[in-house]
Amino acid sequence: MPLAIEVQGRRFGEAEEADLVRYLDDVENSTITFPIEDPRQITLDHACRTMDGQDQFTWLAIRQVCRVLGAGLGTYIGDLAGFRRAPTSEDAEFHSDDDAAAVFNMAVRRRFRRELMGHQIIRSATTGTIDAVVGHGYRRLPNRDFMERVKEALASVDEPLQFHEPLVVGRRVTVRYRFAASVFEGDDRMLSAHGGFSFANSEVGDGAVRGTPLLWFDPSGAALMPYNAGSRVAHTGKDFPRRMQRLLDRTLERWRGSPLFQGVGQHIEELADQNLGFGGADEDADDGRFRALVSQLRHKQLTQSMARRVLRRAVFAGGREEAPIDLMRSERRRTWGGRTALDVLVALLRESEATLLNVTARERLEQLAYQMLAGRFRLE
Image 1 (cartoon, helix red, strand yellow):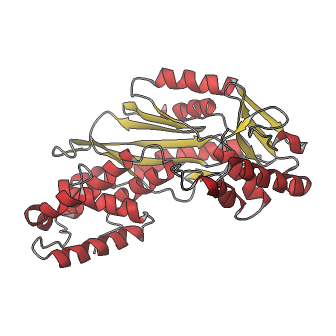
Image 2 (image 1 turned 180 degrees about the vertical axis):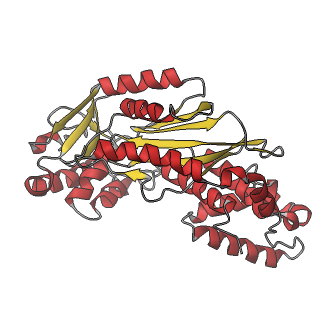
């Protein structure tokens, strides 16, 4: 048996709000939360199941336990178990779930009384998994209750809203709503733009409650207004419900006070006027410019591989799709010289849609798209 399992993601359609609510009801009805009082509740047997309960850990829960027990322990155990590595016969001797479980058990037994006693387990009775291990002060907000609070807050909005693109990854839920009326009409890459909201919650300690306005571009994706002070609420403290309501109210206020939603067309025109600086004829110069642009994107917290994928989309097809390297080079003379910052914006939006289940990476791309649109980040 593997040491732990990866959580699964599910995307619901725009007409499936009732299905999402039923799904969240089922998850909540199978959820059990209880304190850790004995090491056997989390130590593992030969099948990598808990000794007391025969439950299987998720990788999130493993990392949460390791984070409490010691710095670097989670990274070492994940590497030892071969987490997120493609298995090959040559590497088999260097990875072992049994050895990883032995190290995990040793650390739990050594530091249980000081570090883990009194923490809470969040368990699914349906799947028999330990989905999270959180501190004794953690206040879990069930996703179904979160959905109800969001809908109550949006009831005060006097323009028609559409339920749009709900996503569940493990016990993290993101729900988005957009206005029925568009604020911009464009070309085939951006048929229209709609204002809206994004709200997110995690039941298992891997993310705060979050809320922010967004701009949704059909068919490319969303530009997400960055989270600022008051846009995140941690699941702790007796005043958590009050702070949660304040976050919802503040998100609506940020939408009402943002000038960007009234001037989308002008901002897009400004991006279309910013040439990326490729000549198309000098291959060495273009390669150097490509690396310079990748470096600028990396300074905005994109990984090297992600930054390169974004730029490949931008220079090859105006952001529409990722390009094979050999085709990129053959197209250099014909297309590269005309590429603009707008192509990068479209590429960021499309890459965010391709990065659907990695919530953190997706929001990073969406927020960078918003910064470009608002003129807060310019490729030099």
